[in-house]
Length: 637
Image (cartoon, rainbow, N blue to C red; front, side, top):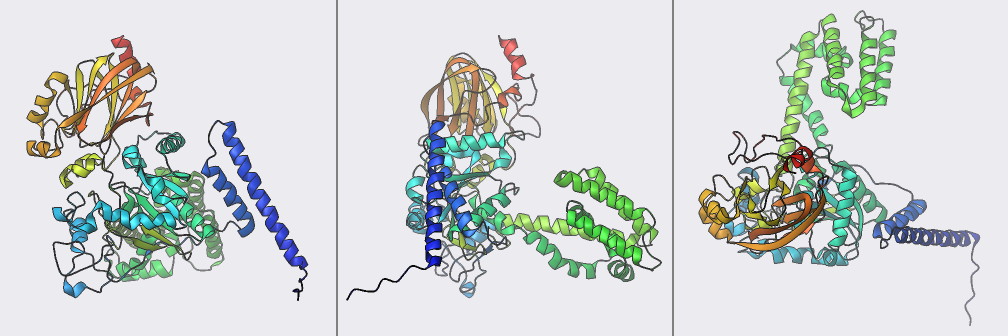
């Protein structure tokens, strides 16, 4: 018998028509994105296609971004919460060692993490450079990440803006498969203060395409150290994870600040909770005012003696200002004799309104105005001692929070272990996003061409920049060279004089000299005029420098024409007119290459003279300014 065909209900027909309409909308937007890209002369970007897909998802499911809660680490028995390595108590010489009585505890970190967190040291046999054990070998890291390409997930790829080409994995596309990638460009705090963020993001996209990147759906500038851009990055990742019901994997090369970024994400909002949690305990032990005054401040007019942090928050929040005015109405209706002095609330509300208009860039003068009004109000009501106590309490809380944040970024307060050592993270660390999805911190992959893979901890501390780079520009004529510590060198072997703008860590010394004496000078002054390394023995261990022949041609003094990169160390930007022939020297195997300039205009304001001696209190640079580049060009013409 033939089966009876059930009639399609009107509801099903309507649902099918809606699905067909959504499908046509998605196809139309995809074609529009491809057409726009073709008009501009570019290949269709995955970003445009994914944007169309996102819009269609928003129309169908809504634009819910997920719960904006704290990211929490998932404790797992048998794994180190700092590095993700399997714990063991049989051998102190192997990774993951903990005493026998600590086995089974979710909070116990391994001896390797403990040494890195509190002493910044680790045995050589436990480093990725030596790779004596399989757990710390680069091959082991890749085996951990191999299954990702077959998963449906979101990739957050962390790269170092200071060493972009050195930290961009050449096989990233094969590693992540067809999964969408968000580029988190870390260490933005190292760039010059006046850099153009949008221009740098365009440069990142262009460079990533040249390096064969997978489908990049977004580029976010961040600083794990300062927290810049981290809120935006987390919200983006959480939004996509919620829409697609997919986990997030954080990938990156060694030393890009990946684990520090994870700790910064985990610390969001926790500092404020720390204040609330500890405030009641500290109030009981505070001896700056009598218990009677504190009780009167808490039960009576506490709302008028706000500490600096509360005033700042309330003044920049429209609802806080309304609350202020509502409190004033309550006071006006109160028959108590201790109501606010006439005109005092108006003055405070005006100062708060001024802060509200100025927003996060509030002027210190208006903050002092609020403080002064608060002091006068407290004095008029006989509560000056309590006011001072509350301010001191706020100061102590801010100090504790800053200390807690520093420890958190190092991994001491429940975070993941961080250090300058390549290969600190040894396994996967899971974190809850609060939307039924997870975020995973992964081991940093070793890029063989990076100079940092060959350095000791003391040398890494000097090479890896910890604060904003003090770039400097020198005029280098034919026959002269620039030593970048004792690690690399660049020679002008022919052509016109060029301006070399140097971007390396502030602890790396720079010296200008003659090419014919370069090798002798390097061995004679290593550890003194040029460093790191700090001894001649380390020069021998690093190995001899090998030559890479390069050339460049500039057409203007207004912007640099090319960057010369030393992977893992920094770069030199060249500015001039005409052709120049160069020799770039680096240890064998260290990547030396050219690229489009990242900071093309810095030579205009940082041209300085070189005296041959270090400035007192500085590590490498003389600050005897010889005028702008334009002025010096006129002189040398």
